[in-house]
Image: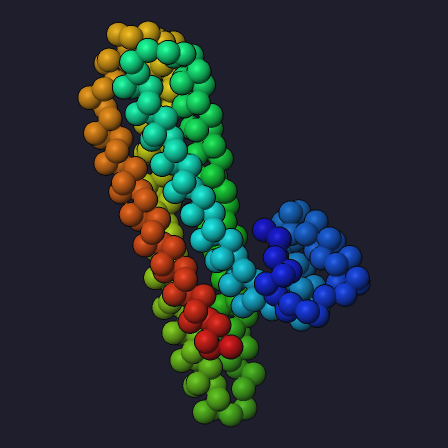
Length: 229
């Protein structure tokens, strides 16, 4: 939930800013989002900047989750097509791959939630400030830009949520197989899982496809926001 300072207002960081950032991170973790955003604005970092930063973080987390799920699939294939050697070692690698996939998936979920949090705060603030305009032309222009940004955001968050929804079913399948092998680590049990490979491969391929779409939407959203600034 913290902000990558290297991407925000690069070159304008002082010792006081870094000290303030430590305090702000504590506030954010404690759930004091309103105070967090307010304090960040005082050091020149606005909600729009934080939103872009969090979208970048979520995009990077999705890249990592793709790798971990692909690795877990490879380990599953390795166990199911076992032809001799250290079976326990192969199982342990599968368990590790599953654990890493689960951890990466949770990180993606957290990143998406953090995006929704700052986006809601940004749009609420933007909406409320429209009434402060005295120029109707400027108000209309700002209102149109708000509508456009919301539209881009909705497309982004829809893609991210769709990709996120594909993670749990795949994790559940991996977990079932890991548990089954844990209690039945023998040739007969492994053979019984061979028909499952095609289904797992299909589910992982679908997940990776949705992740790629979500990542592309993240890149497009970041480009749109940065162009408007």
